[in-house]
Length: 172
Image (cartoon, rainbow, N blue to C red):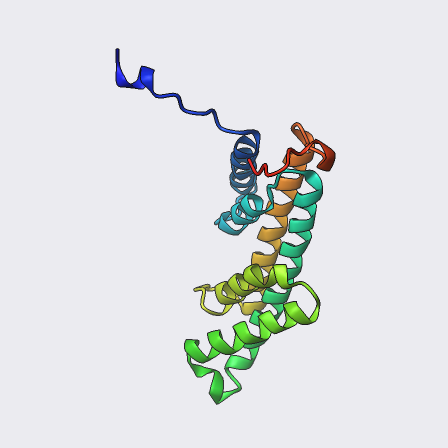
């Protein structure tokens, strides 16, 4: 008897399939509209695909707020960079910017958004782009928004699970 006949592997769960489908739609949309690099959209879709539509929506809102905060602070740092001698090294920009981004997330009672806010900030201030800072920041925010919307649409459109249907301890 072959070894593969003895191994019983579980089938991918619904959330796994919905996440893969969301990534597929993000990449497909970017290909269709000729938009480069769907990484941020795909990341947002992966992060926002949760067990229930309600939880996906909550995570999506937090992610969008975090993206906006990180984008705005990152843009501010890029615009100040040429005018302040203190902001000449990436280490100073990165450390100070992360301090401000996390502080703002906590100040606005959105601590769940601090991770994505920090990542977006760093992508903007450390990321290499030939675009002007405002357009680069806007692109990162738009890409994230696209990923959130796609994840929500997939989660709403394909066997949406409600809070009361969710088995306790389930995450797949």
